[in-house]
Image (cartoon, rainbow, N blue to C red; front, side, top):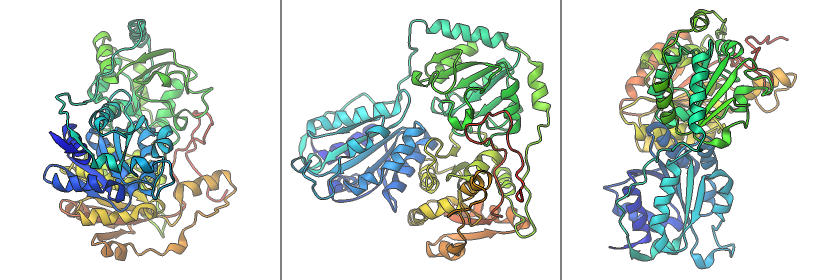
Length: 565
């Protein structure tokens, strides 16, 4: 069948199961958009307000569904506008295929209008990238891009396609092979010994502690994690990226581990004799001072990427492989055990900090998010921006399901959450989707309210408004002698109700405790059919606690900040 390059692109997307793409048109991708017009009954395109928002939407779609997200942008600034979104996906191992247009092949390298070497630009932030200069290579390159993005340690792949390639024609070679996520086989001849040694170490441990990361979710290994925790009789913590990997209403869950994790998680870390790290890279925001992290424990590290072993922490036993397959094997070999330490730890009152309002600002993020959790039964999909809003969401919403917490963990991208929420809702139309933002992050992406309104994407946008860049201000208070340089936003004077109305979005304000439940109920009802927004007015001096300062030992988290000291 003789097809144009642009038709081949769309046929390949359909072949790979991509029925939804996000993007923004431009000169170098006009042929692609003409094909999308012809195929509009088979593939849905969501135009956002900015290419970065489109990339975040494709990312959120991937995180919420487990499918590979797709984003399309034109050459030059369109392509470069994707880079923050691509880097966000790369740092969090999210499967994404970015298709960019470029100038025709005869104009490459001539500083042509809207030309940029996007493969060179994105080389450090993609799993792989391609430029297709021959139409005969186009179909197989796209198929390979999906295979690379969705197999092994997942990640973004970029395919750059000059405009003349999208206009040329050739026979389209149909493929019967769908590029689905490939299972990772065990690597290395001595791996069975590593697994057997891990089984022996787990069986002999009296104080085992499970630390689960985003790899559990990526591998769809939530049931295997639950089974392992029950067999080992171990308490469980999750990383920021691992939120939802383990049911947080289960008695064994003791909270997030890391810079803003729970005091109980720190207690477990300090007193355990074995750490089972699963699908995690042991980020610096988790381990603090690596020289004393888990100093009384041996570490079993299970991960699909062997490059992570002994990178940030010293591993006693490394088990490379797909998390789901490794956990299945472990669970078959481990005998049920009971540890007195686990029951003592779970029952212990470790004095977790509680947020309290003031006379002027009685509302706290804790109260709002806990009520949201109650009203949604812990079953909503929560996206976040980055900063205090992100940590409060992770601390106070009790995630019961995988793929229900969507947040930029590795790159920490302010402006990520609204686009991601849009993508998540497109991918999971039957789920309640809420983006929790700070006023600082919201200012970076409020243009995507246009997208939510124009396409009637029924999400809830919660803006926690303290008129400051809260997390930066918290660091300035603690480490910079309260020099609040450029973090006070009092001069913005945003009327969120009028702003929402201008976009055609119903907006509420929460400024006292008695407003919380009624406003959330109204918003949840509206979000069944239309987007809405809530401004939550809080005190600028509310802090995210506990807190472990960067690079310091995890042993003694800060649980209280004296605002006058």
